Length: 372
Image (cartoon, rainbow, N blue to C red; front, side, top):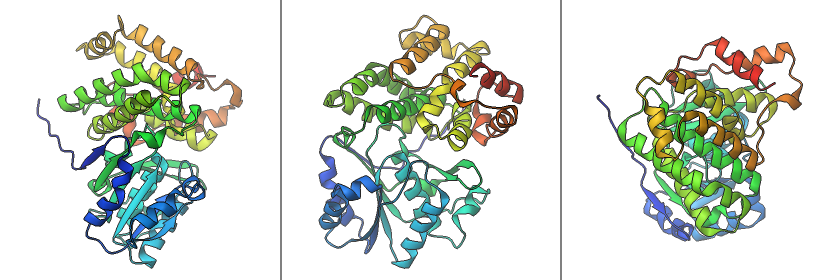
């Protein structure tokens, strides 16, 4: 078995490490930067504090990134980066902020519009320096070469991938996640869970990423219910932030698989939160993949996680979704036949083909019928 491993993002992890951001900004030896964040960090005054700490190196703030960021938001960031002649970016927020900022930092080096990259244009090979500061525990975007953007006008949501999307530095401060509400805690935590499990069974899996995936899965299973029920539990928050980071390292090389492919139309068509959308199908695909698991890898994983087999493991995932208040079907949406077919056709993005079992349209129809 031949494999390669590289992880180019330096990581600062620990409670309170957000205080080191100003120092890290100055270490970049750049002249002018843009802080990209969400509206809440502007209204709470945190963005202004960061601007002051940068001692003039951060020239402006863009604080209008929404969940599942649209290409228009990313284009605004690109235009602003060019307009004020920025040479670095600080991204503070959840996965949507990090993804949008990463894409903007790369696309700002080109003359093409953001829309071109959702249509298949390769991501530029270079990008502006970017410090990623996650405030949720789920996406792992601070250490990955992937950014997911949406074109809401066309009902599209697609991942972009390329080495230029790796941040220059990740500062992971678990204390920043304490204010996450329970639903966000559940969704982001299950996103990290799916990253880990999909990385493990991806056709591109390799030993280092396998080990990272197993480690992250154990942390999530041990801590996600606690973080959900006890938001102020600092130990659970720290372990979930660690799991999210490790899960990001686990999947950035093997990539995600069928559950993530299915999540894109579920989010773009029905506005289901990303992590909830991934979790909706993960147990179905676990059962499917386990049936064809001739090497017994998934059986060994189930046993290492404390389950007798993959059937029991899948049942635990369903139980976990119930405990976290996440949807377990699509029955409330009243999906008609035309919408059903759009859902099937929309689930065929490239990461579908990383799945160990070849997923056909008939598989997808069986999956979605089981949820109606």
